[in-house]
Length: 559
Ligand SMILES: [Zn+2]
Image: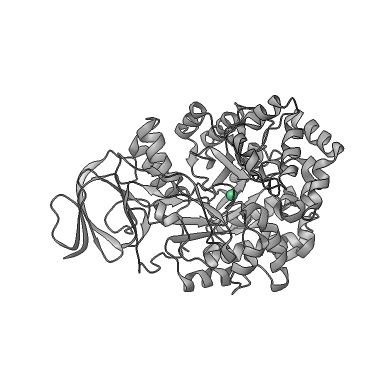
């Protein structure tokens, strides 16, 4: 007798192989058998017409803080994710000394899209070192499986304190960081993660610590992966980091490099393809470089109190440094405006906002008499008023006490281009950023969007290839053994969905962060069931009551 038998599904095994009709049986936490006419199970599910595949492995999440108060890792499991990799971009909370906790939270508030109050209320700081953090996560348990990066920004803050956001590290400090990376890999870090991207800033516009690292530091810390013979190097690449340098690191260490965030930019339409071409050329020379791409248009909902799309502009710094309502004076300052306009005139390879005012829309006006303007673009509204778009947007926002909500679809909105990126053999489809940017967007359902929008609606790639990109491929790249495939003895991490309906619903705002703060979320469409290690955790898009915390903390990765 099996514990569970799912009968007559279209089985897609995660290897890219063609689908086949079969039953799948689970005993305990593992797949016991796959084949025709299997014996009885304590629980039986008829799956005629449904697709059964491995659970989604989301390799780009930021649940490091949230998981300490929310073991449900909301909303990823309800959106089909059975394994989440945390610590991307190096935005971690371990290691962290008690007197650096507030500093760490101030660094995280902008990139996470959570207020300092939410982080202060929410984070359970029952650890200091990275090994203690992993032990803490393991003891607490979670709904999905978790793999964790050791993150560069925490590492720097641990060794350098406040200086981490200000200067190069000394050789002594670099050695200390390197030995911590080695220890982290020994106890089960999936790799080392960092960011050199200009839009990654902490409170007051202070750069994230990793952005201060010089070449010697990058070589030493990634060298720890080579010395340990395990782990993946992940980075979100700024315009100052070349693919050639990353290939050099891959060659020196013999370890894979995952390069984020390759998002298509209509003002520099060839840039991502050029990056993918260089990554492909490096692969041709035997280096394991991958380009992380997204299947979601990058949407941002924001007010001018926290305008993430603009914060990558150097000229925006005075606005980020202003406290509270002081920012209104900065926005009103003609010199500030002139500097922003001048910077936007110069094209940049890696930048969120590139002066495409027609892609910024007024989503919600604060004042009733302005509601008639909702839904129009800033470009159109400024033209109608015969004003410069930046001037119009800032003046309008000031007149509404900076409470106007704008929405911007800035990058990855050209579907022909994004389709080409998704099919690129050197691309890894990921980049949900789940757990971060919570007030700006929610792409935690990226896998369902790939299966629904790109496979069913657009026919951009075959279902088997899409499933492989979400399961077997990330398991291989990250060296996660026994997951990401439907095969006998593999973990029973399963996804059962209706291919005619699968997708993600519209974004909506909920108020369930610590202190009742808001975040954006989406619901699954066409998702019949999600199992983690044989335990059903979601059904019809909702959490299963009493599901417990079946996820494992993953510590053993293929060398
Ligand atoms: Zn990220």
